[in-house]
Length: 265
Image (cartoon, rainbow, N blue to C red; front, side, top):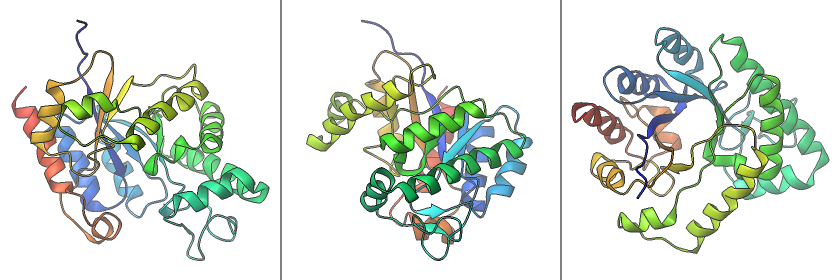
């Protein structure tokens, strides 16, 4: 049997808040975290960039926000796809429908995606990868625009959220039709991203926000052959931003897992 390669440990939502940023920094300096995905329009983005510049070993990519988060261009320039406060709504199905069928929405979507890549470039940080908040790049229209804009800014790697249902089942998770459907749907994204690097397996979908040390150790025992990424949502404190957007996530437990893994290496 082929042996699995050591997984990459990554963090989403870098820039969301000071608590998240501190969690990412601690997970990198004292734990096993090696990469993070930056929300360029989030309230804590400037603080995240400051921390990242002081952490040359931390690989940073763009966490493209096109649902349930702040836009960069604002409602005046994105009237068809954002709320009056300039935020993207929480309903992915509604936004996905607009992104696919509305020419006006697609024009705004393309402009916002490019603006977020441009804002990342302005930080001066090397662009290691790109992915999307709530995996909105599963949407083929979003994926096509993200990849096209990304290539313009030197993108070489994206996340393809392909979580093998069989592995999760072996870990004791309840696996249903939706899990299999999402796994096979990821093949379209991998096809769209041909020529770009990506991990063969990605873990963190089924247990999103609940990647405790017990679950991670269980997952590591069942890790399949091939490259793998395990993503987390670490935070040093449950501040207002974290509590408001992800009230049921175990951010501090996920940080503790990343720190505990370092101690066992």
